[in-house]
Image 1 (tube, rainbow, N blue to C red):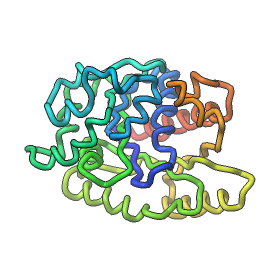
Image 2 (cartoon, one colour):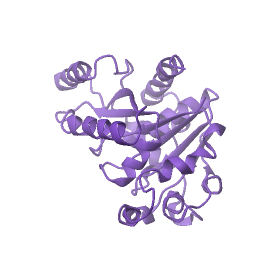
Image 3 (cartoon, one colour):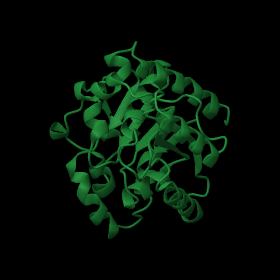
Length: 257
């Protein structure tokens, strides 16, 4: 049974794209077939998977605005079993263009219906904002995975994020749930990181993964090579952490079916 999961936090720089790419790659290595949908106009997931945004024949923009066939937009990535619906700069205008279109909140959900059962998991990389693109992602999803960085302002904006999830659940997607919370950019040398972990666990009782993603140079370097950290340096601490997260993710997720 396919599960559609939005990776969402309206704060930027929380490890959202890093989690999308590397959790997908780790699951792909476990023989799960993954589709990533990049609905962030910055297109960092697209370039981080080695896809040249300037050479695209079509993108998520064409699906949302021009109703292009979803199957014709999927591309292979350098990671085993990981496929992508890419994004490029055109998507920046979609927030305005979608406002006047019919079914503007459900266009992504409708587009995924024809292909969703070809994959085990579909991850939607959301923009760091609460606009119509994020609403489309949440409306199309079964659940939300929330990355939170282990830094001072970690919980700033989280109540607003949860309000948005509740609003979408109430009005557009009654089955939407929180899949889990991933703590990233952890530095065990600082008391602050340890305090943030405790705060987040109190706020999201029972929803925080035990695997915590550390600060890691290899994790930061991998996207510039168009590779996941598993493909760039499989023995790095970052790669090991995402492999552990993938195992825990599967235990939580597949236990629900």
